[in-house]
Image 1 (spheres, rainbow, N blue to C red):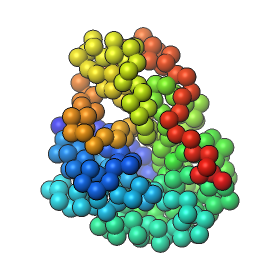
Image 2 (image 1 turned 45 degrees about the horizontal axis):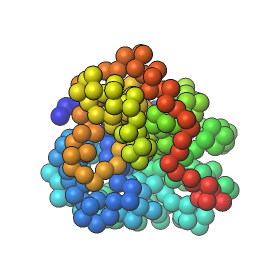
Image 3 (image 1 turned 120 degrees about the vertical axis):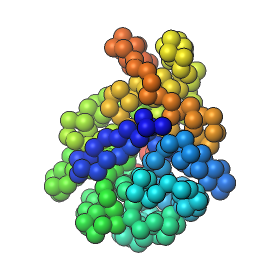
Length: 273
């Protein structure tokens, strides 16, 4: 249980768990039960977003848990509509109300909406100083977006949450972030199940008594990338946490890296208009 609480120190000193639960498209009882199961299995990071429409479900699970608030790490995100309306603080306050929390551990800009994201970042800086947020970061930002932020702000994003998995290694962006002190957090780390069927992952995992999914997650963690696999299945939630008792060697890491085909499970171009 102690292993699952391994953390990465963000650039502002806040400790963030390397492994968490994503709840994208999990609603109602599914979301509540998934969060409760994760917390029972030692997870402490829960990742949601206003656009997921499940912050209230997450909040109910958090408050039914016996885990002290100070042990939890809760991430949510400001959606594009609020950015376009300039209603960033209002969006945060609504998220806090739905979650039933007095502060958010990590608040992310969900997408770099053109003409909006720089001003959104300035507001996030203010929210962080107010104490309503412990750390601020971004999601789906490319290098060009991060460089624009650097031009207008002295505060570097603590996290960039992006799609990374063996089929989409995203090496250039990952390297840029890590070189600039931005923690990389992988969503869809299992490529929405596509990686489970890869023979390379299955074969390597079998040598350690691990599944392809566990081998996938271990490859990411050994690259210094935090992961938030989504599942509502108790067996998968438990399985995804059992990734700390083995280590891939360099040949195995390279074999998994060779699976890269720049395959993305998400096309977010419509959100960037």
